[in-house]
Image (cartoon, rainbow, N blue to C red):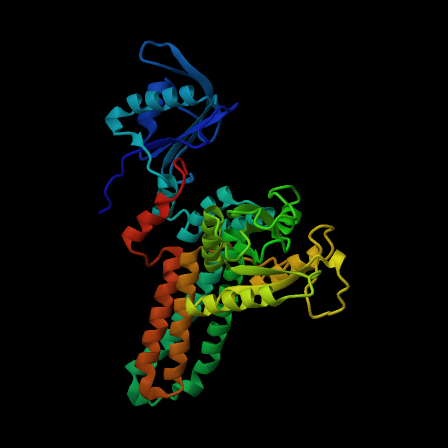
Length: 456
């Protein structure tokens, strides 16, 4: 038997000064609360002009009240929305007054994400759709908005449900074979298990690929500019940011600390970090900056190693590049991409097509550099199948793929290993169920929704 949940209230719009502010209430049987405000029935889903007054009948605010009776609401419960004026104090007074009116109902302030959590618990949305709401709110590019809307409409969930259905069908065939061994069913041939496994494997890989693209769109990447002093790192930062972020001078060691700026490449948020030039220094401030440069290199997704193309002596840069590669190998940073960039093309006569040559001063070659960055990140431009995935989605998809791959090894052994084959399929299905919330521990569920905004 499901316990009755206390009704909850929160401001659904951003806190601050605005022309309109919305207070949302959700709970069971909110008709009592409406009877405190009106002496007549309130029409569902219609805006009703309301004067909200305090206990002394003094006006608090005037606005529109909309009633959404269960189950036809966002949360699946009765929902009341009051659309009033968006001042901080007036919104607080509105919430306080509603809590007073709903005291007998145990109306309380909502916890972060509790409205979305109730929508999930009442089967109005699945977990992937609930997370898409937060992703839509936090989206920082048009591409991210489009992708979040696709997930919110159920595109991602449908892909997962289709995979689960395929796994369920294959598991049923395996179980039938295990239950009736006396029939001597040639499972591998009659059920075409290998073909079914291949279809599941290919579909799962496609979803994982689209999710990795979406994770890039959501999380972006960290690009670190590294190299010797005076190779043009700060100039490149300014060129990429299209504004004067870093001080540029011909004096070596001008940049003494990390400078960070966010740009967007094809909708992907890229954090560009300009670092202090790497060299031996006796200046205490510069030494701290160089230590931070090495730390940034270890955290990078991509390192742009700049060289001065106008300098005929590349000995120092060669030694520095070797030192960086040694450091990456020692700390097992195999996933970090390193791209060599030859700067100051405008001051040198470079004919080598194998080199990525630019001029941070004039902008020549910078567009090619941007394309190389996107290629290194694995981004496929103009893709309409991107899934704005979170890290937990990627973890579940990768683990599901591991189980599918393991299942193939048992399948190749024939009917004698069908139980192990079936078990790997079950484990893969469980991992996929975690994405939509059909199989998810309660403590993890609470952690997910606690990251949402209050009122969402």
